[in-house]
Length: 346
Image (cartoon, rainbow, N blue to C red):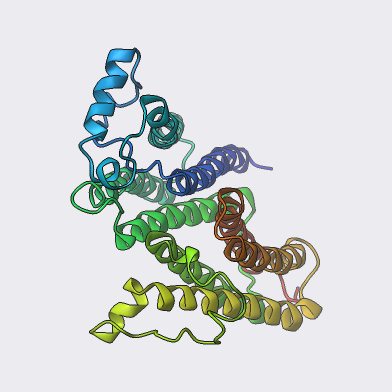
C-alpha cells in the first residue's frame, strides 16, 4: 500500500465516523419528532445555543417563551415545567449533536488540508459537504418556524426537505468514503449496475414519501394492511384541487403512495437479487446484494408492524433507522458493482 493509499484510508475512516454521526442524527431527529419535542425550543441561537438552561430561573425563562407558542396553547396547555424539560432535552440534544457533527467534520478537514493529505479533486467535494451541513442547520430552523406561527405542526414540505438533505449528505459522504477506502477500478458489472441505480432511486423516493407521511402524521390513519379501511384503494384519494396536491397534502393519498413505493422498492430489490445473483462475482458485490435483499424484507416488516401498532415510538424509530440502513447497503452494493470485474474478464 502506497503512502497516499494509507492517507486515503485514514480520511475514509474519518468520513465513515461522520457518516455514523449523521446516521445517528437522522434517528435522533425522528425521535425528536415522534416524542413531540421538535417545537420545544422556540428560538435559534447558532452561536450561544450550545448551553442549556443552567438554573431554575433560566429554565423558567425558556418555559415562559414556550408557553407563548401554538403548541403549548393548543396541544400542551397546562404542561408543568418538569414535563417541558422532558421534551426540551430531545430537541436540545438534536441541535447540539448537529453542531458536534460540524466540529468533527471541520477540524480534521482543516488538519488534512494543512498536511496536504487530501488530493485536489476531493477538496471541493468535502468543502461542499461542509456547506451543505451548515445549510441543513438553517433548513432545520426554517422547518421549526413553520410550527411556531399559527398551527402547532411543522410543514410536511419543510420536514421532508430537511430529512432528504440529511439523507443526501449521508449518501454522498458515504460514497466518497468508499471511494477512498477501496481502490477504484474501471470495471462495470453492467447488469448489476442497471439494477442498482433504480433500486437506489426508489429507496430515496420512498424515504421522501415517508417524510410526507411523518409530516402529515398519516401513519395514524388506516392502521390495517394490506387493505385501507377494507379497500385496496382508499375511498377518497383525490379530494383536493388541483389534483396533484393530494400527493403531498392528503393523508390517505400520501399513505397509499408510501405503501405502493415501499412494495415497489421491495419488489425491485427482490427481482434484482433473483436476476443478478447467479452471475455476480464473489466478494463485496455478492454479499452486499444478499444483505440488501434481507434488509428490504426486514424494512417492509418493520413498516407494516409500525402501521398496525399505530406508530409506537420504538417501532417507528426502528423503521426510520432501517430505511437508512437499507440505503447504506444499496450504496455499498452499487459501489461494489462499479469495481467488480465480470466473470471471464482479465
